[in-house]
Structure formats: C-alpha cells, structure tokens
Length: 49
Image 1 (cartoon, rainbow, N blue to C red):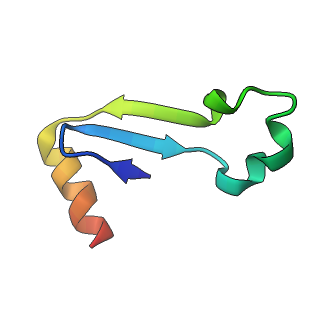
Image 2 (cartoon, helix red, strand yellow):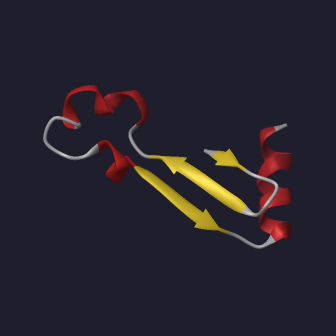
C-alpha cells in the first residue's frame, strides 16, 4: 500500500504473485487507487512509521 499526501491510497493486490497471472488478467487489474480524506491518509502514514 502506498499513501500519497494528496489523499490517494494505492493498493497493489497480490503483489509479486502476479508474475504469471498477468498472462491471463491485465496487470492494471491488480492495482486499486482510492481517494481518501486527509485524516485517513495521515492515519495510514502514521501506521507505517
């Protein structure tokens, strides 16, 4: 998970396990981007520290 200061969270689903799955399913289907409130982004950044 990557948290950006602009209030966006990027979540990579399955991580390195997509090595062979992306042959069948496009790789962009394994990444989800969410816009979250600034307080949620700050909380997630604090959890990572």
